[in-house]
Image 1 (spheres, rainbow, N blue to C red):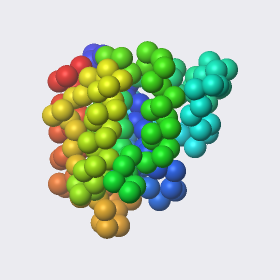
Image 2 (cartoon, one colour; image 1 turned 30 degrees about the horizontal axis):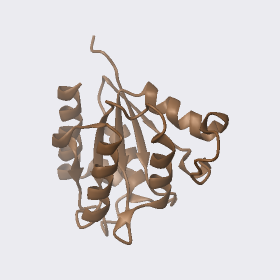
Image 3 (tube, rainbow, N blue to C red; image 1 turned 120 degrees about the vertical axis):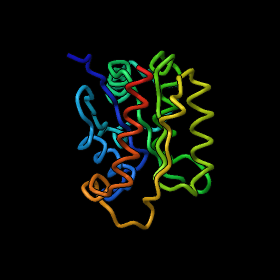
Image 4 (spheres, rainbow, N blue to C red; image 1 turned 135 degrees about the horizontal axis):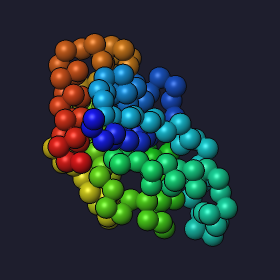
Length: 175
């Protein structure tokens, strides 16, 4: 029996029809054993980052920290806004800077729009600064922007299906 690999997947968009969230849902649908994909739903519950607040007294912040610490691997999928990381994703990362949750944590960056290079570069810099271990071979960009695909469509598309299974295989090889 294989050891389970718990993956916490975080989409950097709060939109109901987010391609990034659809991508994470597709991964959850496709993931074979031993993967346990948990999609984080609380990004919109985090207060705006304020270092004057006691993070340990904020349930949304401690909940995210504890979920990250409990995961074996993190998947981050964030849209690009004005050549930068989405506000909700940046806010979540800012809350995690002051704790140990990212230190040595294996992490994969997913990009639903290959032309969104600025946000990916900024995310890479931020999580590297936070001491995460990027699984470079698993970091992928997929041409989802304008595709009209939802999670089921992403999972059913043969090329996307293969790319996502390859990404999971890279994670398994790394773990």
